Structures are given as C-alpha cells and as structure tokens.
Image (cartoon, rainbow, N blue to C red):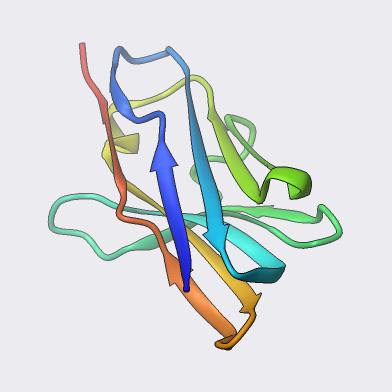
Length: 120
C-alpha cells in the first residue's frame, strides 16, 4: 500500500508565494512520474505540473514562469513552489504519482488534497 500526503496549503494574498509538499510512503520500489493537479469549484481537475525520474518537467500554460515543480528522490517527496499567486490559482491541489510498489505492481496513487486560496 502506498500513501501520498500533501501539506503546505493555505490562504495567501495575491502576489505572494506558497510551497506545497507531497510525501509518498509505503512499500515503494520505484516512483516514476510525480504530478500536481488542481480542481477549482465547478471545474474539472487539471494537470498543473509534472516531473519524471530524470527531472524533466512540464507545466500548464497558466502557471509557466510562476510555479516550479521539483522532487527529492531520497525522501520520496515532490514539491510545488508557487510564486506570484493569483486568485484564479484558488483550488484544491492534489498530488499524483505512478508508483511501482511491492505487492501491487505499477499503479497511480492520489493524495487527499490541500486547499489553496488566493484572496485579498
């Protein structure tokens, strides 16, 4: 069994920064891609940023230049540094990872989500 636990969300004023973290734990053999998704009220869940095992990253156009995804493989943790936050970044942010775990093989796992609210 693999668990993903996010942290770092909160209420912040426009223009400020937040850093989200997501730690994976359990019977992990390898973590492949790690992603951040978000879902705003009344909208579909969307991919915000992703990072593969080689450190290659991809971003949604709406966050390019403002958000940075990174990972610490030794800690099985992925981060999302969010700068210059805008009200439209308000959403629940979810961590997602493709994991090869002992006993379960390769599967996608999701965290429980962390709320980010950007408001003055």
